[in-house]
Image (cartoon, helix red, strand yellow):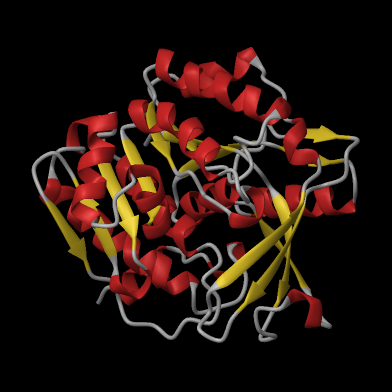
Length: 317
């Protein structure tokens, strides 16, 4: 089984549970471990896969807590970095239908440094680039770009999730699109939300959006559509793979659980790149991954809600 190296932010989510979508009126917040790439690493490990995480947290109690969470979930933290800067925080509001919004207080995540020795871990493995904060400049963006280049030169399978957040890119959407293009061009697999696919392609129609994104370079595209399932696009075929019915309470981390499960399934293959044009094989993997994402929405918090193999298999029966 290949190792999946996940790169980006690890942070504290302060979640206003059952309190509407106005953070200013929330009297109580619950502390949760979060950060999209860290969620993905935990999702893979929870299912029995081999994952590691590269990111930066503070030398503070929150950083200690986050390190403990990764290690409890059996994620390799050999290349996790610590900084004197305080751990990054995100404040999450959740509406009645489980949809969420974020406000960020950035800290240590932006202090990630490039370590050349890490690229040995990429060789013939898989690299997932899924950070929400990685393209905002500073040390993190520079390191992210170096690790991306290392993944390419070490012939790793590359997965990209742009994780667009309105709070981070207000009035800078054009810059976000421009910075994403090299990753879309070189990645074997791209995972988008509907909003991201439309923003990055310039098309409202899903089929046209995928055609434009394929022309940029990516081999396979998955677009998560919430309760409707996932739109899968390869060079040969496109279609929507339905999800399982659930009653969502918190959609935080659902997309991370989905892509984590998909990468876990791909990591069991000798050469995952070879199946990027195989719609039938990918559609079965997406069907399983949809269930993983759906299960995550039935509880509060991203990492605590991630399913294990027993829960995933039970949901598919």
